Length: 90
Image (cartoon, rainbow, N blue to C red; front, side, top):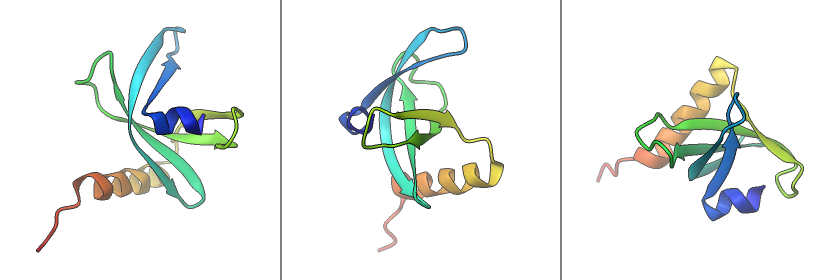
């Protein structure tokens, strides 16, 4: 799974079993967890999606899950914001 994420794309199934392709915008490791920031390739205007990688990221025994805890989500979203939108104050 980590190889797919680092290659830059992943295909997920929605609640109805339909496949949707996503571009991996960024992978982040925080507090010994891996997170991904995804953008829909089918509808690039959709909001970006933050998911946590569960399981062993070095093998195919991993999956992407939603971040249900509000505090965890806020911390990860802020970390992604800093990575993507860090403005050089010089």
